[in-house]
Image 1: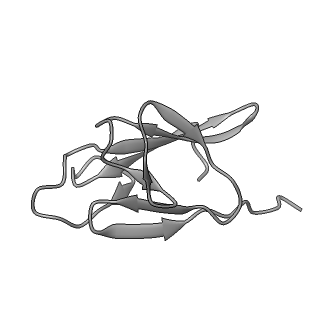
Image 2: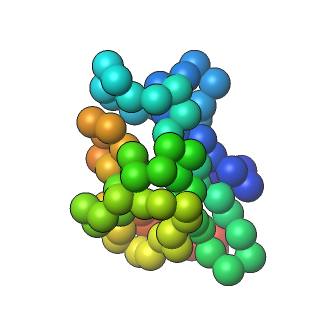
Length: 81
């Protein structure tokens, strides 16, 4: 994730594409802030982190499992060294 915000959905304009016939065009966003990375629900309750639905935003921690529609991903921080 190199941008300040990275969108997740099935739209052709998002950076991370998800599976699912009923998936929203834009479901969530990962926002890079000074105090960490946050998963922001564009469609409240649709994205999940570690099996829990996200309302609003949630701080991402090393190893968190993100589920958006039929797509699962794991969050890792990469050292810039």
